[in-house]
Length: 311
Ligand SMILES: N=CN[C@@H](CCC(=O)O)C(=O)O
Ligand SMILES: [Mn+2]
Ligand SMILES: [Mn+2]
Image (cartoon, rainbow, N blue to C red; front, side, top):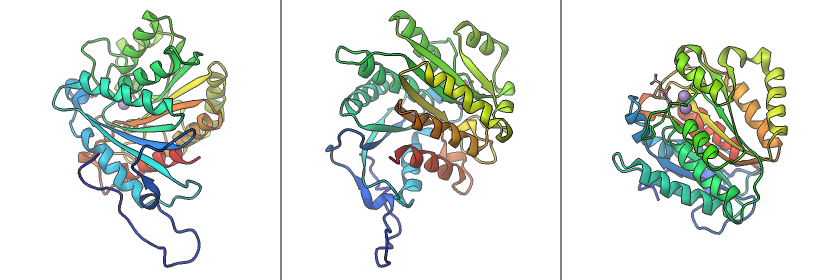
């Protein structure tokens, strides 16, 4: 469990009506079951450090919980905080392995899991847990869509892994095991990805759209794209890199993108995936509180996490 208690906020219970906020409905036991919402943190920026980026994402789970704490509960009656897996120093693979085991265990209970990263090395950890859940001996099998909302492909081929390699790691691993995994990346910034990364995306049959195609006026077409991708899969892993948002909305990231995808579009994509009934796992990565301005990024991350937690 995190040392400081982030679950603190206003108490309006003296007023009439439903005044519940998230800090008043959070639970820390393990008595969750099918369809219950569970929040878990992966406190790591070892992948960002390895990837020549700005450290600080390791504090994100704590700061995001603080921003979530005071939000009204609305349709959510309870949710569980499963605490953090901490990455000590550069011991990333050990932390990813611990996170994968925990993800598999929580998904095995039938819960709806939302992970707060960490750099995007979170995705390789989360995927491995989901892979065991879906394709392990008791798993249902079926086609998996990995849907990443991100300014970056994160398809770097260097190893050991870092925050820029997770989807190459996932696709390589899926190929080795002949698993039906498709990768789609929405929000790519032309100015944040080299031609080598576009080439890697083409080699791996990645479905991608650039940020310039992900604006409000193009939303209907993008939702139709998502519907087609969803129709070709039984399961979805949704991963949101905070740097997909414009730097003005989310300055607190390692690698800001000035153009970005509007929060309204990101939310519409999230809601479309949720409505499909195929969402098995979601995470939000790359929030770096050290570079935030007046909590703007923390609030945007909390807003996305809040939507994922709602029934
Ligand atoms: N998580 C991904 N990070 C980007 C970082 C790019 C940058 O630092 O400019 C990537 O590897 O492409
Ligand atoms: Mn990114
Ligand atoms: Mn990323």
